[in-house]
Image (cartoon, rainbow, N blue to C red):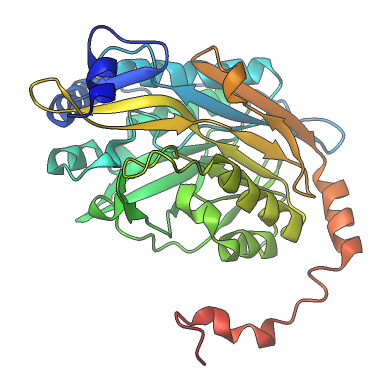
Length: 358
């Protein structure tokens, strides 16, 4: 056992670390789901809607960064409360479109292959996360792209639903690119998405959403830009590499998305988690850990970072970044540069191949 893992997993919760055992986590998830299901809230019918329409063709986007630090071992209720509190805090900062991190309901459970954790998946129509977030969206008049672990028949997906400011679910995107490596064993849990890339016309503008590993693929961002995205959002869970502690991908991670923004002249928003999540053996000793580096950020349409959650500034479990955009001004700027006018799609057949051979 790694001595650093043993040291961090011992004792009570710390400000920036959280520990979990897969079996206990799955059990606590079912308890949380049972409690939420008993509330039987109607997500739309009995909720007063906010009529805030934004102003002067501008809207405010918020990137939310959360940590599991400080929560009790195997607890999930704290994740759920923090996510809801974060939405309300973002509203108080004037946000109209609010992005939470990937799979925010609990720890990033894909560190290893644990069949019991497949029980965390929910059918879309039976997902209490979506129902509760519909109420928050309608109450506050905000747009919420919501990440959840989806079950559909015998398939499991890493999915997003987009909830408009009136509480209506506009549609769903299923993660297209599924990673598989030490600490990020998503191919065990998730079927590759079958929705294709999507954009949605919301009250405040047209948004595109990719999920974590999607953010490394320029084809995804270009597709959403071509479909008319005014802004592209990436909920994320990324941090250290368990097999090699010398790897720090944070700057690279930011730069690849800055490139998407610059190449497509579309602003990018990324929301990551922060802090150390420790996977435990059944005896309570440390087994493996990932330290999520945060670094959530927002760019303008040229790729310049205009808001960022710096590690040395992280002192609260909830961090909120905001920026204001004018979709019409961004569209005019994009048209003036001619990047989409001068595309040559008939020359790009090679992009449809795996090996570059036509």
